[in-house]
Length: 110
Image 1 (cartoon, rainbow, N blue to C red):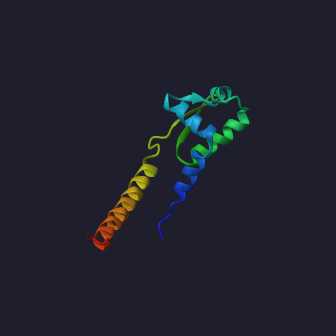
Image 2: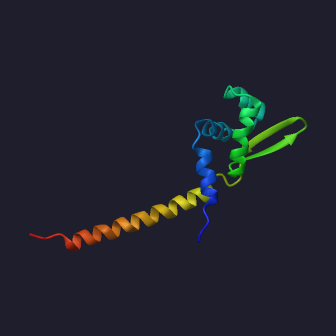
Image 3: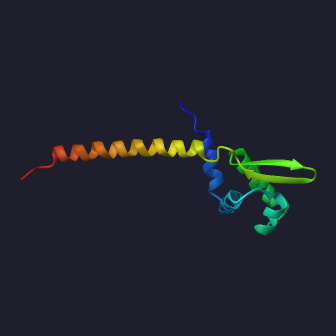
C-alpha cells in the first residue's frame, strides 16, 4: 500500500490560517521566530508550535545562530504535494473523459 503520511502532515499544516500566513511571510524571505511572533501577535511559545508543525511537514527549515532562531522555506517546498495533486488531477480527468465517452456511446441519437 502506498504511504501518504507526508500529505497528512502537509495538509494538516496548511489547514491553519496562521501557518499559511507564516509560509506567505517566509516566501518573502527568512525571518526570526521573534519577528514572526511579533508579526502574528503571538507568544514565542505559540509561534514555535506553529513552526514545529511546519518543520515536521518539511515546509520550513530553522537554524539557530547564537541565541536567535531563523526560519526559511524548505528547499523542496510543496514539490511532493504538487506532484501528488497533479497525478490525482490526471486520474480524475481520465475518469471524466471515460465517462464522457461512455455517455456519448449510450445516449440515444435522434
